[in-house]
Length: 403
Image 1 (cartoon, rainbow, N blue to C red):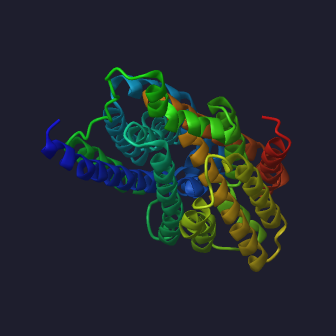
Image 2: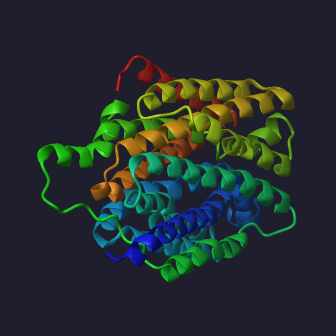
């Protein structure tokens, strides 16, 4: 490798990382801003065809179920065809699925479009795998926190913006405009020069030197005290507990506290906004050695926040619950990111992050199904109560070392 190539590589890597994060933000904004408003879409666009807002939880489940099935397979394919090509595929697939969803004229077509989003998307795991093949574990852990911040920014801005537009725009047609975000990301990634994968050393080395070369990943995995399979189970449990309230959050606030869609959108995004404020100071306290314990305590804090929301009878109490939940979720996601970096290997980064995101999606699938069963019969606040109990179970599991 020439001196010029060596000098150009950091700049190329920085550009690739920046574009990856920016592209993920656009895709996350497009994918995450609409689910809280599925009930409104069903009422406004398909009410004449017999579609009920109570079915929002089932529609919420469709893309997550499809993603849960597809993401591990896409991850294995990424290890074969290359992580950059896989990331382009994910953005392009999401663009196509948004167009199909925006053109839907029946509830069945709407369901088909949402299912395509899950089947053809997977930008989060594809982005993480693309970063994992080029970065060392410590740097990767930090970048995974940035990726989470990107998703949280989208979750905060997206629902608030859509909530303000809900009375003046056709929500279904917004999917056509949202398709521009992943479409643009796909084009930019295609034009980006391939930074290449960090090449493994091929020189013959002594056993002690070989151990030193492999030590960063091996040492990180040993110090975190958790296997990759165990992390997948914890991710699924945390996802199902926290996502339970998503499908009916806006409807719950409208019924229980008479809060409008715009304000509900802001409240929905509050925990994700707190992620942006707290990720850096909380992340500095996390390392491979203490991430497992930290995940348990942050899960307990998240559960307490959800209990406060479920029992809130006033707006200030609800705000306090959302804030407490936001602090807990921030720490928990950062701990999961650290554990994910510690248990990742460059050779199987696609499979690892595909499986991790698959666990996250299976948790969301379970959450959507449970919410759809609970809300119509027990009220829109019922998913919050169950979610709090499940997240508390994660704390108990880690506290007593059951996994």
